[in-house]
Image (cartoon, rainbow, N blue to C red; front, side, top):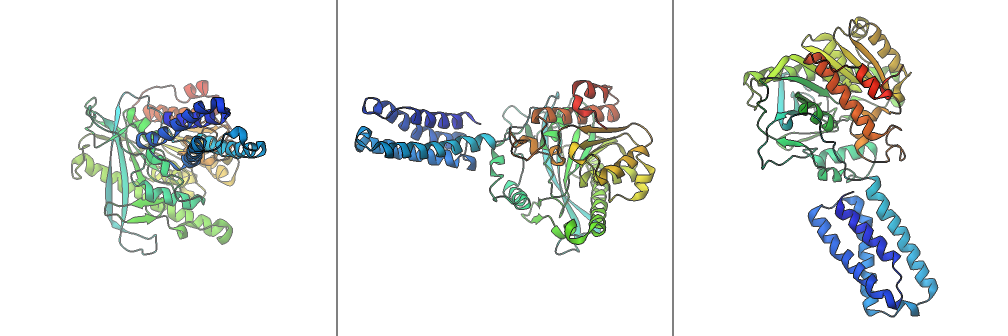
Length: 469
C-alpha cells in the first residue's frame, strides 16, 4: 500500500479505538477531522483506485459521525445498545476497507538489476504480403502493434511511461475474459515503471542482441513488462508483439480497438479435442508468421528503412525468442523452421498443435523448456517431452515447484497473497520473479552473447525450485 493510503486506514482505526465519552470526545473529534483532511490529500497526490472505495466510504461515515458529535447529544446519554451496534457495523466496514487495498495493491514492478536504463517505443506494422484471416471481417492486410525495449540514456528530466499504453481498452478486455468488473484493472495505471518512452539509445555498446516475445491466448504485448525491463537493463533489445485478434486487445494509432476473436480458439468442451487442436494449430501458424514478419521488419529498422532510434544498433545475428503457452508454441514453430533464431525459451509452451514434423526433428538450437507444476504430466507435457528428447544440443528440461500456468506472466505481481486467494501457485511471488529473471538473463546471455553465467547450474544452486522431472 502507498503511504497516504496507510495513513487513512491508520487514522480510521485510531478513531474507532478511542472512547467517545465526554472527557475524551475532543481527541476523537480531532482524529476524525484529520481523517477528513487526509482523504483529499491522498486523492490529489497518490490518485484514486477502486480498492480504496470502502476506505473512502468509511472516512465519510467517520466525518459525519464527527460532525454529529459536535452538535449532537453526549454519547453517554445514548442507549448502550445503539452505541454497540454502531461500533460493530463500523468495525465490519473497517475490516473490508483495510483488507481490500492490501489484498489488491497497486502492483510494484521490481527494479531491474542490469547496468542500463530502459527506453521504449511502439510501432504499427502492416504486412502487405498476408491477408487477415481472423476476426469478423477478414480480408485486409494483417496489422500488428509491437513495443520495443532497449538500453537507454534518458535525460535528467525524463519521465517514465505507463505499464500498458492503452489500459482502458486492454484492461476492460482482460476483465471481460476472466469475468470480473470492467474497472478491475484500472489501478494498473498507477504502477510506476522503470522505462522511459523515446529515450536516446545507450552508447555503451555498438549493437545489442535482440530477443522477441510472443504472448499466449488473450495475452498482450506488455503482459511480461517486468521481464522486458529486466532483459533491456541487461543489454538486450526486447520486442514484444500484440498478435492481433489473439491478444486481449490491440489498439492501433488511429484509435481502432481490435479484441480477441473468440471464434479463433473455441471452447474445447463445445467443439471437441480434434477441432480445438486444429484451431490451435492455425493460430500457432499465424503467430509464427507474425514472428517471421516482425524479424523481417527489424532488419528494416536496423537498415534505417523504418525510422527509429535503433538504426544500426541491432545485432540480428544473435536473435533469441521466448513465449508463453500459445506463444511458446509459436516460438517453437518459428525456431524450428527459421535459421535466424539462435536460442529460445518456452514457458509452458503449448506444443500439442505444433506441426508433428517439428516435434519429430526436435530443436536444432539451444532451447529451454520451463514448465509449471500445474502442467507436469498432462497431454501437452508428453508431446513436449518428445520434442525435448529429439533435440540436438543444449536442451534444458525444467520445472518450477509451486507454480500454475499463468504464473509465468504478470499474475505474481497482482497480490501479496495470490496463492491464498487462488490466482497463482503456492510459490513466493518474489522468488518466482527472481527465478524467471535469472532464467532469461542467464540463458540468453550464454547463448546470444557467449557469457558464461553458469546456466543452468547456478540457478539450481540458488533456486532449488528450478530442478524438476
